Length: 213
Image 1 (cartoon, rainbow, N blue to C red):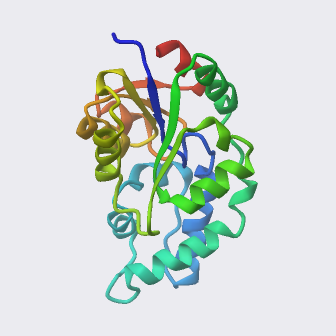
Image 2: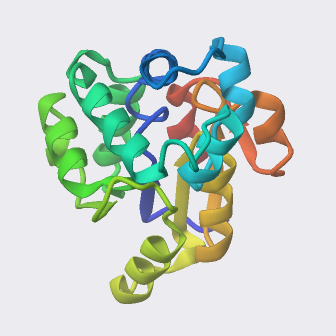
């Protein structure tokens, strides 16, 4: 195994612990628009995924009644109202500092809008640990495969020396498209069983990550 030179970190559910908060925001959105269903954490982790539009369909939203862009905007207003209260995932700060101490470059690669990433990482005092913060230009959460591939193609980084760390099967999909190794954290937005189905290596704590590089 080649020495790792670059770690791509997912943000939501991986470095930032916003899973329970996201469930509450989903249930609040359902209530706001008059839907009866509500989701437990366990049920949420079985339906969440990318693209976000498809996840909203699985959650039961009717786009003929409530167009997806309207729902997405309402959700983000609700989410952004108190996201600053979400903590870093347990062990995240230590893992990031350990990786940085080894001289390994680090980047965030997220489906979130880039300006949100910059603000949220800065608010938690870790923005300076990343050489890049790669995010989308909008709030619609289509995916990050193209973003990751374009960055890797232009960076000169060797895919064999890169690792993607995330918490969803979309992170595994993105890593495959980029030709990089993928490690998935089981405490995020998807269930352990769904992550195991990707065939990627799993970790139950971010503190395990540096030992796998």
